Image 1 (cartoon, rainbow, N blue to C red):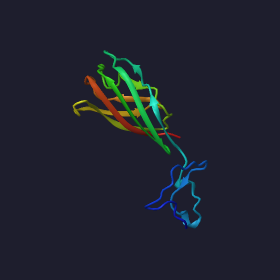
Image 2: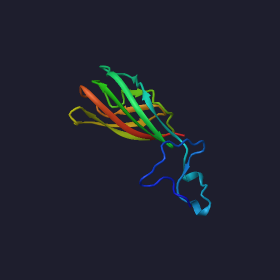
Image 3: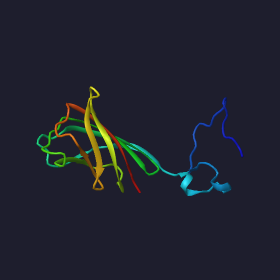
Image 4: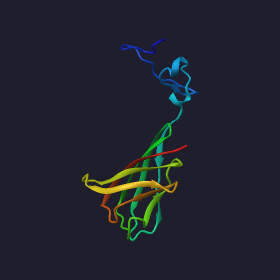
Amino acid sequence: QIDLGATGSKWKDLYLSGGVVFGDAGGSGTSSSNTLDSYEEGTWTPALGGTWTTNPTALSGTYTKVGRVVTITMSFSGGVKSSAIAGYFTGLPVAMIYNGTGVVNDTGIVAQGTCTFANTDRVWVTENTLGTSNYLTGQYITA
């Protein structure tokens, strides 16, 4: 076993083509279930789907993908829909294979309901009338 880096000296950058294996999987050290081989982050632009009484505006988002877990954040202004299943957001940055959940707050950190990631590419928000400036965050699973 060899340590890389120390308290007083650290490695600056590390470029890998195969991933990082955590732990010693039964002595072999090669278990794919312990390998982190995917990390990605970026921005995305949500799109509107379904029917909105008043469309949200200023839609923008960021995401981080670590392994198979995608965490998204998005901000938007306003929005009114007739029911919980009327309007939704689409355009997720990474394809979804398992549903996920999240929360929505406004700038005053007042709860604006929850959200559900479903139907492979949709974010459903439970509230019908949303605040002036909203922030949504949640997670789902990809392939």
